[in-house]
Amino acid sequence: MSPDPNPRRARHPLRLRRRPARWERQAPTWRQARPAVIAGALRRALVRPSGNWFVLGATADVTPARPLSGAVAGTEVVVWRDARGRLVGGPGQCPHLGAPLADSPVRCGTLVCRWHGLSLDGSGYAGWEPLPVHDDGVLVWVRLDAVGGEEPTRAPMVPVRPALAASVHAVWTGVGACEPRDVVANRLDPWHGAWFHPYSFVDLAVVRAPGDGEDDDTFVVDVSFRLARRVVVPVRAEFTAPEPRTVLMRITDGAGAGSVVETHATPLGPDELGRPRTAVVEAVVATSKRPGFALARALAPALRPLLRTAAGRLWHDDLAYAVRLRELRERGGRETGTALAKDAKDAKRVDGSPEDPRCRARGAESGAPTASKPSVPRKKRTGD
Image 1 (cartoon, rainbow, N blue to C red):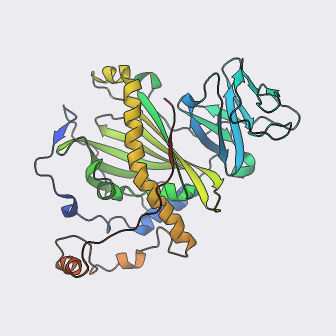
Image 2: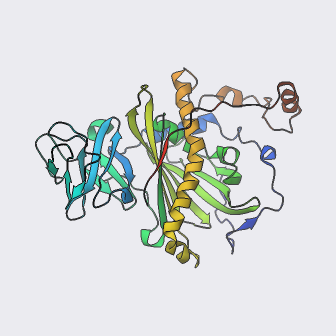
């Protein structure tokens, strides 16, 4: 399938769905969401270079008085701003006796350990070596060569974004008991959007999916963002994976063309039960050429919590599914991309739609289907 090269542009971004289909009567997408396509896109994403850069958190979380800290694959990291406002960082343990630097205050650009008062200005100190860090204006990155194991690069691969002065951005962070690959696999399946998130997406159609070649790895999706029961905003968007822990969604046509949603997956290390943990850091950078968007920029402080709430609602569900992918893999279940691959070739299988009489008969015999959910992942909210 190939996308329409000249989609019709609307004068007004809002649309009224005149005959909206009920959720259970929308067209099933499981035949189009071929496991081999998703697995191939994931496999190619995982081998792309990252330069050993990992997203640590939001730029706004690094204040003049407080550092930003976290763990990357079990390695404690702390970053702060020096006296000139530059981002500096290094290991999260004090070189004196290993006290945590996460809660240490910053005084005149110097991080002061709360255990014995040792001060760090971001330069090297005996037993403490600074780490390469990067602030792109929205997110903070740290380079860990021992963790990444790749050829290091001077800077991370930051996706092209709208100019920050002409946009509104927000960052949401959540944590789940899964691996980064499970988060990326979830995002490389756009077909589930209108089924799993009907409160946000309707009328979804994947008009182009990746082929077998490495140069053909873009999903093109027509979808409507749901504002009310019948009021929607239709757009065309592209999904790509520029590096192994990032999935980028860019609106290419419709309201907010040029806006991006970046989903970054950072491994944190095992929890108390030995399960892997991953932080999902999602950055929304919204823009528009419509005259009214100037008002949206003026109201940015009020809009950011709404953007974070919307991201958190989606990831409450998607992280639970990412956790399930990890659990299936550990139990010896079939990996994403191979599960149902054999079944997908059988055109006579029940597709689960209510119009199928076999589906109705099965429902009458067994009652309403139920689904078990993994434990709700822990979430946290980053600052503006």
